[in-house]
Length: 260
Image 1 (cartoon, rainbow, N blue to C red):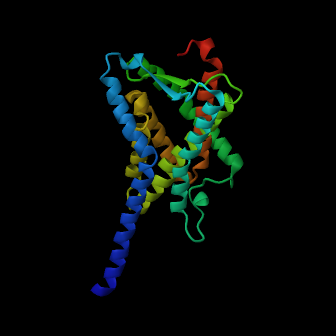
Image 2 (cartoon, rainbow, N blue to C red; image 1 turned 180 degrees about the horizontal axis):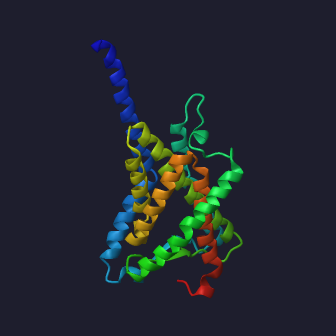
Image 3 (tube, rainbow, N blue to C red; image 1 turned 180 degrees about the vertical axis):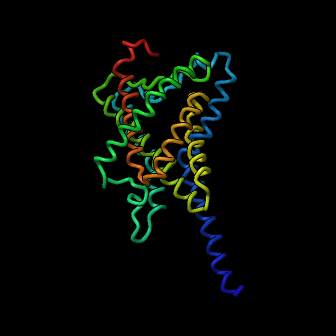
């Protein structure tokens, strides 16, 4: 009986090690790396003479004063940011198993996904604004400048693409991939959701710890929703709406509203 059990135990150990390695590799190439930089960025900000609320973080920065070179840089950045998503989906796939269907990142329920996504964006968006302004007043956040792109014909389309990229990267990796792998490793649901939420908050630390806390709360809502529905697409829709409104709205109305 001992000799029969050994191969199974060995296979299980190898599988757990592989799953753990996959998590570290995907995160190291994407949002885990961003989290490390965000921690260093926050430390740098807190050690500056200016108060945190007197500092500014730019989300979509111009990369060149030359219009079409800037456009090229923007598109390359968006494209390469999606490579870890492709890796995560590849790792989740298998013979006769679609990663897209496995995490609900498909068009099987377009109407339902749009409805839930719009609802989630409203639930998250309004309190999120309150957290931002409260955190800024309490010196917990920096001022967020959504864009410094020039006024070109491609500015709004690029901002929309940037919003879509953020949504896909974060929801597929932090929710779909990470939660699936942690469940396979035998983690309990509260620990899975908490880990996903903490990771989401950590790579927003460059905006201040107030915004990190706000994003952690968003992560709890999104994680629980995914647990109940097994679909990432509504989360991608919700995240896209939030970022498009923020990015494009800022670009169109920053001057009128007196924003930085």
